[in-house]
Length: 497
Image (cartoon, rainbow, N blue to C red; front, top):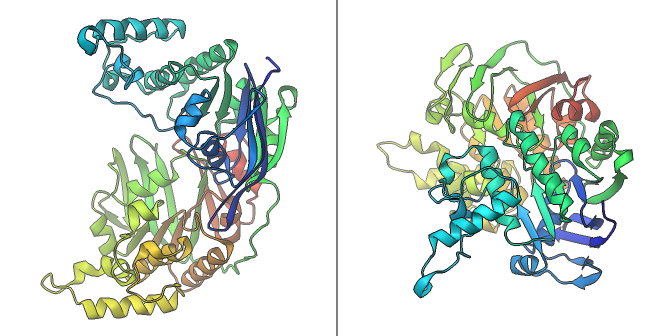
């Protein structure tokens, strides 16, 4: 490993709406080094990388490349300074060939300035051979495996001659049999002097490939480990730290033995053989790292994603997992992970967002606007939604108040079972506490609640029982009495207890 300082980030700070997400973070990268960046979801890894890639600007701090201070104000700046990124979500055009994807927008020209397919294929062939990627340049991307597509994505970035390569969860979608193929290519890039920032939640992979590991927690730099210091348990302890930061302790009651929901062998392309149950009045937590299959499980059982096999029972009655409306009519509500993209109508008022799940009750298909506004007002007061009136557009509300609108929509429908995917993501501590109090009160009244959360402390604060997922499967289950951050993270990373 070279010791040439390729990148230095010092004192990086970033806040969104007065909420600090990065505070005095430090990170460095040597030429010909694989430096892994780790932390729980929400620790600040993505924000730090977006600053490096020019997507965000930092509020304060300095960035040096090859010892020269630089200002990265846009993705074009990042590209000019030799920074490339392989995103977790592949950005490829399936109907184009491998060569066309690699050089899209930079195709070699032939006679009269037209595209030269021959030159394009020759250029791509040379690059693929240099990278020892055994894929034909004229193969359509839609015919490739996920691992091959990932290698094409790497080739596309390498074709732009980066000095710094960011790899964000590059193996998250790969079967174990194809991971070693990709890792060997990563080592090869290291050997030719490229500095690689490697982001992954797979502990064994990190230990195998890293020259150094830096851990972030709650937007701060916890520490950096040299190769000889890298230890899985030590990394887990650095990632989770101590329980703290949220002053909420739910008073739990004895949960009823009555089972209100049972899921058996739920399977699709993202999850495998997922089975669990939910009791009356219980708050059941779902934990796991990014890509573990938590959100996919909830979307599948609510009928939002196709299912290959599996059965769902509510109050011992079998339900279809392909019709969300049927589940709503049978007392199930679902607030998805991305409230802005999947739950809210941002250009509609508060009252309309709250009442929209009630529309199937409309008499002869005619809405009662007065009744809907009164319903919105009722839940604005009940959940203390900070809005000038129920006529205020939802896009004008804070994240916490937007989340209260989503929860209000389902409470207005009087569900027996409420599924909440990341209910407090992106909202401040005060709003979190209010939401926890609401959910605790609802469970006391007999509502059964499933909470998917990336924050382990959140689940430890409010859940009665926690299910942990890893790579599309349930890897562990803990009662709240036995649950600790370390145990949850151990299951989440696929380690044995």
